[in-house]
Image (tube, rainbow, N blue to C red):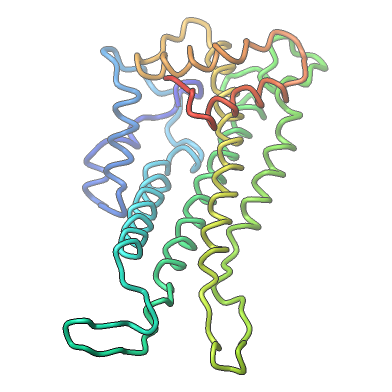
Length: 269
């Protein structure tokens, strides 16, 4: 938002009180805190692309999906899912379907779709940052111009990763066949739903590394731009692992280095 000169009116709490959708107010508050500063910058735009303007809505839906998935997991961890179920006090054994994790699978299918939404917005912002000059940034975020490729080669990688995420976001809950002579004629595919969520997160983390790199480059190209304290710390953390692009170079190794610290927990910002 700082690199693009985005309009921060989208974070006004009154907007989100008017439409208190899924954790939207929580997401907007987090963004306001990241961008908090003594002297607010004047926006350079009236209406930004939706990947920026709708961030509170997109992030809020993910926050709610995470909460729902957490609740579903906690219920399963504390549940008696045995079949048969032994009721000691009643001296009785009951046949049950408590092992059937439909709600858990659905929670993770929903979480996967929410992750895919956020990843799609991340990819769109990367294209906005690295594409045209309409935001006043040099084309491809190249400081030398001309035939310089800058960040544009990474656009292909970003779109390929998003395609993989979108593929994994397809529901699997209904992909089953009757087995055990038709007795087990329904299934939830919960392990697969959970596993593909983990795979989507791994891919999205790489997209986040790309977006951080592009945002840091755009900030460096904005002469005289002073970041908010919180985003300034993030920018410095990125620059610890990725130097500013001054002339064309392979950016894959830089993306790998930044992704590694995001993935292994050593990221500090």
